[in-house]
Length: 246
Image (cartoon, rainbow, N blue to C red; front, top):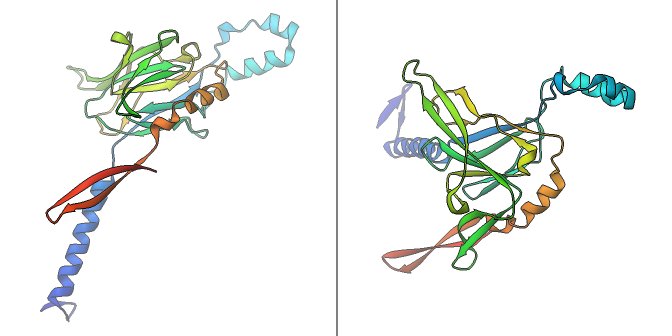
C-alpha cells in the first residue's frame, strides 16, 4: 500500500498508472519524425532587367506592375509537386513550403528538376528505382550540409552535376517542372546543425505551368499509393506480415 496526500493507493492501480505513462512517452517518441522542408518562391524581378521607357510606351499598366514588383519581396508559390522516398507532396499556397519525412541520415541530397520521370519496375508494380527520360530535359543539383573547419558554422553547398546512367538516387528529391522555369542558387548558404533539415529556397519563374505539371504527376501518381501492413498467424509460434493498398 502506497500513500499520496494521506490517501492510500493500491499497488495495482499505481502499476497501471506507471505503465500508462511509459506507454505514452514511448508512443510519442515513435510517432515523432524528423522532417525535410524547403520553400518555393517567385523569381524576383530585377530593376535593371526592366526597360521602363519601352513598357511605358507599349503597356503602361504592365510597366507600373513590374516596377512595383521590384520593390516587393518574392511571394510563395503553391501547387508545385515534388517526390522523395515514396512520398508526393505539393507546395503550400500559404508559404510555398514542401515537407517530407526524413528517410535517410546523411544530410546530402540530389535535387532533380524535370517534367517527367520513368519507373523501373520489378515484381509487378513494385518500383525498383526511377530514371530520367532520355528525351526530357533535366537538371540535377547536389545539396550537401558541411561544416566550416575554422568558424564551426554549418552551411549548405549547392552544385550542379550530372547523374550517371540517368538513374535517380534514393536520396533524391524530384521537382516536377521544366528546368528553365526553376532557379536553384548555387554556392553556399548558412544553416544550423539540426535533424530537422531546411534546404535552401528555390525560385519559380512566371512561365511555370501548374496545370500541365499536375497532369504529368497524375501519370505516375498510382505508384505512390499508401500501403497498410496486416498480420496473421501462420502457426501457433509465428506471424506473417503482408501489405495491402489503401
